[in-house]
Image (tube, rainbow, N blue to C red):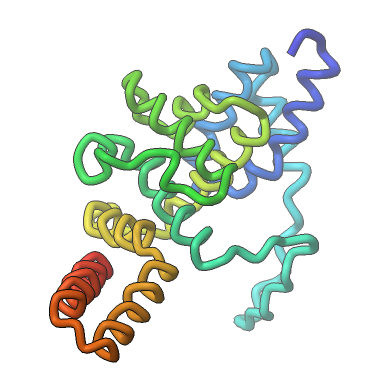
Length: 214
């Protein structure tokens, strides 16, 4: 942010993500962070944000369905799993030292989500405990914006069940449907071949995969 125009442009690009903050306290924290990084007055950022909020319609007691956002990207089941895990780790980075100690960026298939995990891991190693601090370790504006978007979803999980949810996400992350298909095919082939040793190995492999699934 070497000049005023760049700082203003950066703040304006961040406004949609600020609007996604779950509550006023979280939004205030992000505004302070953005003000510190950009050198802008936090009151000016808050005023700009307030000016972009749509006026609330009269409360009639009826809630029309929310239209789909233009250009919204539909996530695959795998991406939902990866994003859900990151949502917890951004709120509870200390879980990287316990429940998810052996997790790495290589476990993520989506490269942008892998980059988010790398930022969270670097931040956790350096003692960062807040999402705004973790974002400092992102390698690009795109990844920082994605971090902010994921962090704004913290209200979607229960903090008391975070450890159990993390374990569930890890099981889903490491379960390979292709490996399941191959193991099942080998089990059928071993039965048809009538080879006891081969059948035993196939059954052990299948049992191990089913245990991972649970």
